[in-house]
Structures are given as structure tokens and as C-alpha cells.
Length: 238
Image (tube, rainbow, N blue to C red):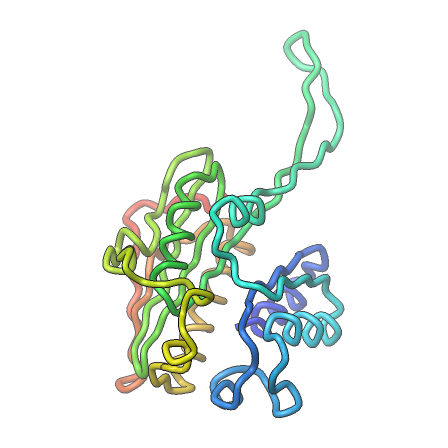
């Protein structure tokens, strides 16, 4: 997914986009087929490899955190937008400050319910946030786009559409034993690519068109089918 997003930002001339990749996982042999890694990356932190590689290729700013985010306050801090003062103007007998607020898009590609629950809770605490969650099995998957703007929810997040992910009995990655961590559900490379494309389509609509009418996308790579759920009334993404 990261190379697609970098390429999109580069193509749009969005040189001021800031990428922050967060992942505490290390590159394993099973990742070489499904993800954008090579044998030289084995044993290295995923976030560092991706941030350094694609920021160098596309010349875009990139940061990384080589650990898992498992704390609510830490995630809230990361998705809190920066606000810049753009000057002052006089209107209606008083001075006003013109500001520019950063658009924050949180993209979740986690493989455990507890991390998704964390993102779900933080989403509802934010004034403004676009939260795109991507999940897939071996041949099928779904991508859900939640939108908060001005303290209101215009599109519901993945935890509302798929409430089973809010199951509190799951564990964070750092809480798993070595045996539990080694268990991995099979995923076809086509499922990963299809999910990534759906995410990039959503981001493109938000950045270029300023809105998205698609709340979720479900797909199957066995019958080459991608089916969106469209909102009846379009809402601005930010």
C-alpha cells in the first residue's frame, strides 16, 4: 500500500504531504511475496524500510515509528491535525485569524481486533478525521471509510459496519506469545493488491474531489468483483 500512496501524492504534485508509517513488525520470509520487501530486508523493521525506501524514490517527506501503537492517548496525539495561522482580516468590526487545518487520514491495515477497536474509539473522540480501514482474508476483503468533520460523523467507521471486530477478547501484537504470533492466516497476493487499490481510490477522491460518496467496498478476487456501498447523500470529506 505505501508505494501506491507515495506514487499518488507524487502524481498529484502533493509535495507537502506528510507520511507517517507505524509498524512494530519485522520483515519475515512470508512477507516477501505479499508485501513490498526484498530478501535484503529480512529481520529489519517494516516501517523504517518503507519510509526510507519510498521517500528516497519519490522525494517526499516521510516519518516512521518502529513500534506498535497500543495506547489511546498516543494514537490521539498522532492523528491530531496541525493548525497554521495564515494571517488576520477585519470583518464585522473586529479582527479574525485565518487558519489552515491539516487533513489527517488514518489508514488501518492491522490484523487484530484489539488494534481496530483502538482506532474505532479514537475516531469518535476526534473533531476531524478520515479513518480508512482495510482488511482481507485469502481471497476476499473489505475497505471501510469513516468520516468525522466538525465533531459530526458523516460516514460510520468499520466498527459499526462490522461490530465483531470490537470483540474485547483479542490481544495486541505485543501481548501475543511467540507461538500465537507465528500463526498467520493465508492471504493471496491479489487480495492484498486489490485492497490497496481500493484504499488509494478513496484517498484520491478525498484529495482531488474533496469528498467521497463510498462508505465501504467489499471484494472477491476469485470472481474479480469489487462492490461499493454508496451513500445516498454525498458529504464533504473535510
